[in-house]
Amino acid sequence: MLSFNSYQNKSRKHAFYPNQNTPNAYRYLVYGITGEAGELAEHFKHSLRDENDILTPERRDKIVKELGDLLWYITNLGIELGVNLEDIAKGNLDKIDSRLEKGTLKGEGDSR
Image (tube, rainbow, N blue to C red; front, side):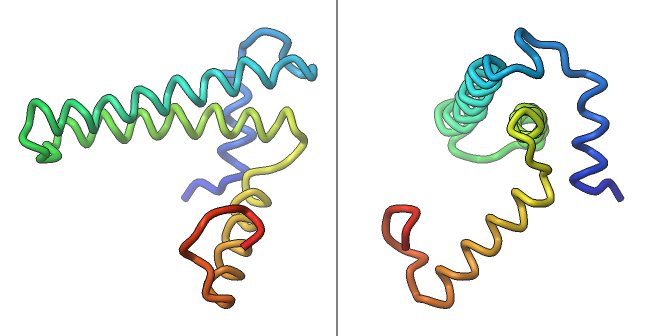
C-alpha cells in the first residue's frame, strides 16, 4: 500500500521543471494540470465519438494513466505550496462531510 505522503516524497525523484522550489513554479504545474485534464477529457470524448460511449478496457487504461499524470502535477503543486497530500485529502473530505451534514452537497460555491 502506498500512502499519499509516500507517493509525494517519491514523486520528487521525477520532478524536473522550470523554477522548481520558487514561487514561479506554480504556473508550470497549473499548466500541467490543465493540460492533463484536457487529455483526460479527450479520452472521454473519443469514447463517446468512436466507441459508442462505451468505455473499452483500452480506453480505461489510457484514462487511468492520465489520472496518474494529474496526480503527479497536483502532488508537486502541493509540495511547492508546502502542503502534503494527506492534508489536502483530509481537508477535502472534511469539506464534503460538512456539506453532507448541512444538506448542501448540491449547489455552487465553496462556502456552502
